[in-house]
Structure formats: structure tokens, C-alpha cells
Image 1 (cartoon, rainbow, N blue to C red):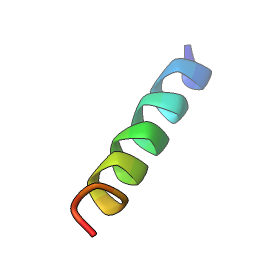
Image 2 (image 1 turned 90 degrees about the vertical axis):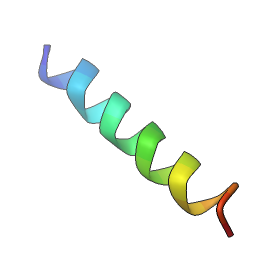
Image 3 (image 1 turned 90 degrees about the horizontal axis):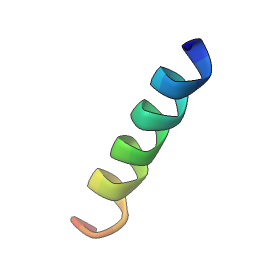
Length: 21
């Protein structure tokens, strides 16, 4: 389950840093 949270956090971070940029 740790993998799921890690992927979700990574995706959220990238999506919040890429598009917003």
C-alpha cells in the first residue's frame, strides 16, 4: 500500500509543478 501512496504523492507533486509551471 505504501507504493500506492508514494505514486499518488509523486503524481500530485509533478502535476502541481508541471501544469502550474
